[in-house]
Amino acid sequence: MIPQAELLNRIMKLQDTMQKDNIAAALLVQRADLFYFSGTGQNAHLFIPAEGEPILVVKKSVTRAQQESELENLIPFKGWDELYKLIAESISSGAQIGLETDVLPANLYFRYQKLLSNYSLVDISNKIRKIRAVKSAHEIRLMREAAKISNSVFNHAGEIIQLGMTEVELAGQLESHARSKGHQGAVRMRGFNQELFYGHIMAGDNSAAISFFDGPTGGSGLNPSFPQGAGAAPIQRNQPILVDFVSILGGYMVDQTRIFCLGNPPMHLLESHRSAVRIKHTLAEMGKPGILCSSLFDKAEKMAKEAGLANHFMGYTEKVSFVGHGLGLELDELPVIARGLDIPLEEGMVFALEPKFIFPGEGTVGIEDTFMVGCNRLDQLTSFNEDIQLL
Image 1 (cartoon, rainbow, N blue to C red):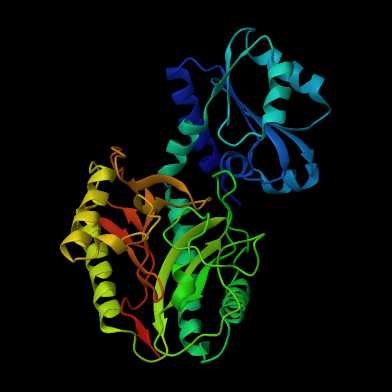
Image 2 (image 1 turned 60 degrees about the vertical axis):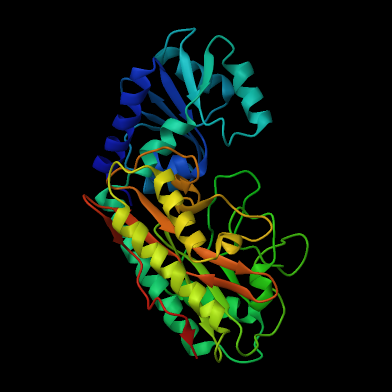
């Protein structure tokens, strides 16, 4: 349960930024944002005026919301007219109301447009994402606990990987292990049509297969309806096995990647992996409040080029232009360590660094760990031996 003081502090931050931009209220419905500001993921509207107390209007389940949320003003949803009446009694006609337009379905937005025709509807999603990017002590504690699940998953991987087992068999066993440790299962993503099932667990050439997923690796998946991740191919000797796993506890996630191998991968893959580890350590030393996300990406790209690996860095024929992504309640939060993104790091931000090299026909090597921005460097939350794990 999220403490009431934590919720009110988050709401106060949103109210402060709304007041600066003359936004009279916010109306939130997206599940991750609802949970962040109310402590419950039930079907509800959270109405937050720029001044005054928030009101949680719950459609289903009212009982669960009452048990889960520490907000004091919680009422049942009695219809759209009643919702409009609540808003009209709180803010003047013509005022601006902030909506999460980055994730709202068009039909729902049109309903709000009709219901609130005498108000001005504006996007508030970026303000919310910036607030969520800086984690509290409560959130960091949960992410450190999630990192313990992650460490257990990688230890388990080293114990169970066998010659001839399929990628999906390995994935299933690791997923079951994580669930037994308290993993919630669902990996939330904010991006439209982006989805993930625990992570990417793939061997050899399949880890170099391209997919729609907005990341350096894709994978075939088991069928075209979910064309990413583990396939049905058996694991062979001397091929890199990518275990890229998202561990979650209490809604909060960490992201981590390690490479395993039954036997010995080719020397150029070993050397490329070492280059990825050096890039990660260099960025961890550089990362501190005030440094631009783009500067970290540029450094990583420069190091990959100096190692003669520019063509393989973060993809091959279809690359991604980032080397890190924010984490929290969603896998694709701010900040993004990306080319051209001139946003400074702030103390308390959490993100994963994932320098990886893709070799078509051979596989993927590299590393990923989750970091928190400290006062003068990055604090690594996840831990496991960084070398390729030779089994």
